[in-house]
Image (cartoon, rainbow, N blue to C red; front, side, top):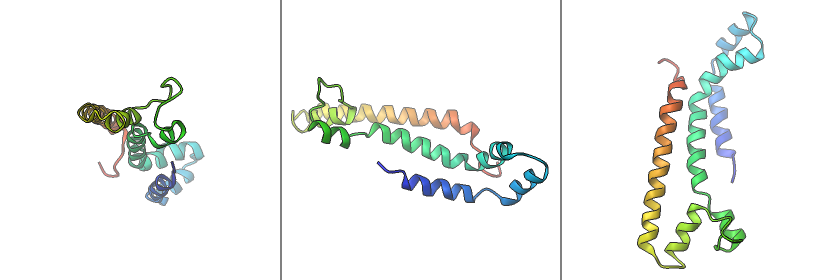
Length: 131
């Protein structure tokens, strides 16, 4: 799992922060923490929301490391059995394709609900530049 794509997006967000606003805050006597909190953070907030949502969705898709470490069994005693591996086990080794499809739809509904809740809760705090 890499963070390179996220770093590029956050660096692009940092470049969107107007230099004049930071300079004005500095000339008004604001230290680095108030400048970061009141100038930089609002302009980077849409990028942070994107990072949060994609991170949450990626967390539900955690499959490959568990599959490689346990050989697809979720051992020992199912302690590493995540939703993606459980779906895989039911679809391919056990041939319960209908049950695996139902698991996938429930997982989709959970991810969609968490994404909508995140947008509603965090969407109020995101600053989009002119609105």
